[in-house]
Length: 374
Ligand SMILES: NC(=O)c1ccc[n+]([C@@H]2O[C@H](COP(=O)([O-])OP(=O)(O)OC[C@H]3O[C@@H](n4cnc5c(N)ncnc54)[C@H](O)[C@@H]3O)[C@@H](O)[C@H]2O)c1
Image 1 (tube, rainbow, N blue to C red):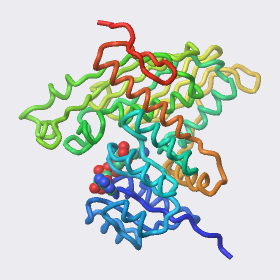
Image 2 (cartoon, rainbow, N blue to C red; image 1 turned 90 degrees about the vertical axis):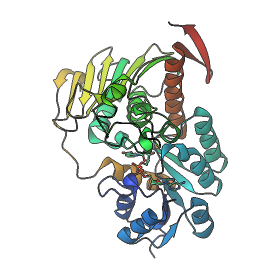
Image 3 (cartoon, rainbow, N blue to C red; image 1 turned 180 degrees about the vertical axis):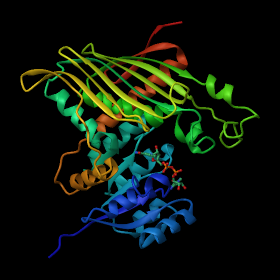
Image 4 (cartoon, protein in one colour; image 1 turned 90 degrees about the horizontal axis):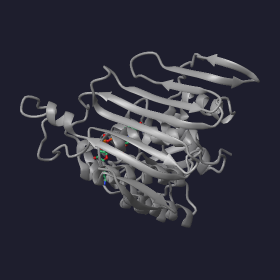
């Protein structure tokens, strides 16, 4: 007899739910152990469209109705950022496993509540960090964890997008709904990769800066794409930089931008300096992806630039397969809720530092404002 399938619902039927390559719904449909039974979106037309396009039987405009009326094992939360925490807690409390898109939450208090609820109800809470499932990232993680470049003490990570951001005017540029600009969009993703390479050491302090000058400069009447609207007055940063120091002495430098004039296409990078070598991963969206490693492998010092073959399997599909495996008790989560919480705490501290012009120090999980810098 065939084993019971994991019954999944998807909350928020926008682009990351429906995209043919990266989307949750099409990718769940590629996993034989999954049955997508219901969709929920406040925009009923979007939910209906998704259900018709993918052949999903049940449609709701409120996720609580979906939880009450359909027997589900798991959900994906693909709504705007500000809704992630409340919806995740509601789903976990009703006994459903949760895959929540990044960012997990917009405050550490919310993220902590999600972690506690997942533990209390013994449910899986996986944060959607699909970049951890990329071939080049996995290869780099393996090389680093085998000690090929020694102890990593300095890591700089960034995601520079050329101007203008493609979704200006949507919820992505509303502080209330997105929480902020590129720090919550791509910054949290690159920070997660950097923290993972360092095995999530204990943070000591954070210093951050935010920039809005470029959007102001290129905005205005002459440019309707950038000009603030009443619904979305572009109150978020368009670039940010931060230095995170750890108790081990290691440090991460993070740079993110939605309006960088340095590049013509996205530039995504992770550079690591270690006590016995160095590594660099560059992942331009247009252009050649590279992984370079100078260190010791198989007892021999090497300068490597391996050719990473593009897999047909998108990292998003691997992430969903992993979520399913964790729900079915076949795998331990690669991204733990506590790791998600640490990312949120650091991004929150970057904003706090930037808006107070102070160094923010962590003390047993609580922030303390440090020395005034200016
Ligand atoms: N991992 C990735 O590669 C990746 C890529 C893009 C977006 N994301 C994340 O996915 C999330 C969604 O982004 P998107 O680009 O799909 O946005 P989107 O605007 O295309 O879709 C969001 C959908 O949520 C719906 N929605 C709003 N409020 C809701 C509610 N209360 N209940 C149910 N549905 C509701 C909207 O109607 C919309 O259909 C964001 O958190 C974003 O950060 C992740």
